[in-house]
Length: 259
Image (cartoon, rainbow, N blue to C red):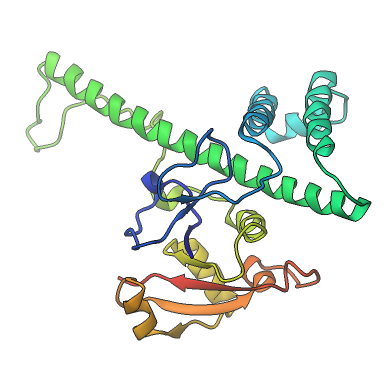
């Protein structure tokens, strides 16, 4: 199994589609999308996942700055606590077994929540991308209605909207890929491999001295772009943390896509 990383939505990934490679699905939508991998037995079902994300996002959006949110966090938000407690109770009611089993399931639920928030972030970026295109078209029609054309220097004589346009260039999109990777690996089969083209992720791995090697024949058989390289490293090295747990000691195979 090969999984695209870090972007879970194809619409946000400039990388070429790899034959057979899947997109990770953390279980937000009611049904998995075609070409995705949704792990079996996720702790949070879609209805609970949607409620938890909506409450978390709604809680965060009421603050203008992170500092304001931190200050407010010193007080008790009864409604938020009740919501989280209800979802936690719903989750824990489905967990059977020893205290160790419950702790392990809670860790999986926390990992799923990280991925659900990243999924929501990507949804918002897609929404903003659509808004950007719509605004550009509306501005074009507005310019035309005013009879605005090119000036004497050949430049478009249009209103400057650069101050309020969302910056949606992929190189300026900051992804929380390290916690995403640590969370995602919990749900992946042992033989799963990640295919990566994101320059920030690859640069971080180069700085961490992740040893990539040429694997020409394997890359060709897998339908990967020419020049793709492979590395197997401990998860701790990939996320920049000391490998002091079984999860962080897990070897993960990643492909740096060429081309």
